[in-house]
Image 1 (spheres, one colour):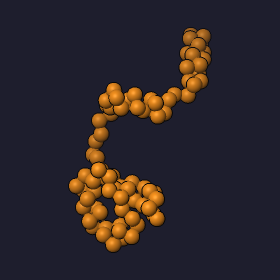
Image 2 (cartoon, rainbow, N blue to C red; image 1 turned 120 degrees about the horizontal axis):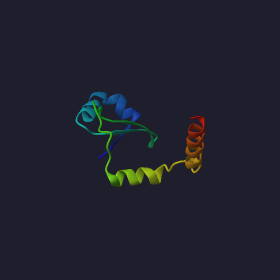
Image 3 (spheres, helix red, strand yellow; image 1 turned 180 degrees about the vertical axis):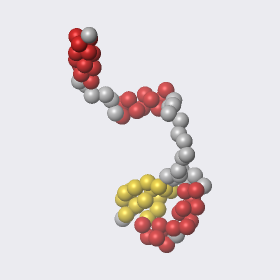
Amino acid sequence: MVRKVSIRELRNSTSQVIEDVENGVPITLTVNRRPVGDIVPHQLSRSPWVSSDRLRDILVEAPADSGLLEDIAAVREATIDDE
């Protein structure tokens, strides 16, 4: 669960906020109740693999450029012609 922390609370309770982050709690920093940034627990390593459901979500959120296949075909064709 993400905890929202105002700038004032961060200033007045920095050690508690840091303790929460150390304990795995992600923090959303707010100014006038508007989210402005995130403080997340540090991860030494992260698996490059994602679940198939997450991969589908990523593709929906950020699909490839519509001209990507044409660009790849042009580069491939140029490479083949150079041989």
